[in-house]
Length: 351
Image 1: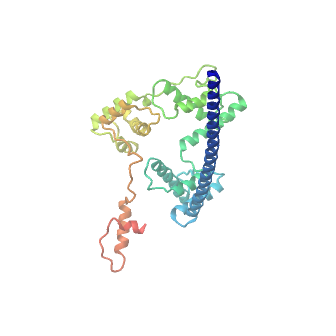
Image 2: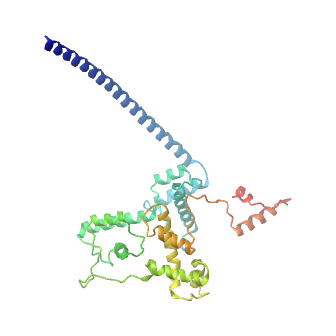
Image 3: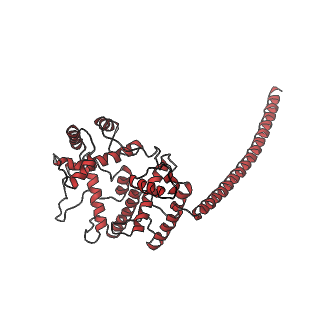
């Protein structure tokens, strides 16, 4: 009798739990449908927002203005030069090409400021317009990708990396530069060309890091001491002790013009070394792979080396060339009945 009662109790409990499970399943299905509907509504709203934002930016690009005028010049340049947006020029290039090249370089610089928090120099619609036409924001990465495409094409066709200099000069120089950079990296010397990602890219191709001499022997070319860190820091310290400062670039201009002569031949390599240190310091400050570490940065700072201004630090945009200021001042005083003293804010209204 007792076992029959227990059986009935467990049966009722099972039915009750099964009913609760079915109810929970129904609730879950309903919530899942609500989630899917909400997700679809969100995606639809995001797509509408994206389209409206693009339409707004397109209208901004059609408005009159100096920046938009240069943007249209860049579009015309791209059409006439097979999609190129680099706008390279030489000293013999026409004046309008030089101005467009300067505008391109300036926008690339402003984009770095933008990514580091200083958003006063370039707008979002301007970044949108340049990105849309394939603008090259990172020249180094762009050139690397181009050369890697050439290397892959050559390897696919010939199956090796013995590139003849006469027929493929550009690719030959790229391979030579990469091998030199790798050799310096293995020797603990400073180099800028290779990081771990790029080395991994080349290793996937089974790249030959050591080139072969035409005679069959491995080509071993000694590297210059000018790229070694420790010797160059000692030379930099000697320069500081002799001159009392580290403004090597100002003296280097006199050396080039033969207005002065360095007391030591090693000093001629210092401008390039200091520029390299400052570029590496920028990478170190942004947390990217760099030849500098905390100890080296501290030692160089104590030595008195001045670093470049961080890209996130606000820039002043109202600096006026002294020669330009004189021209503006003369123009203002030349107006009839104008005896107002020239102020620094006046050129903002004129230019």
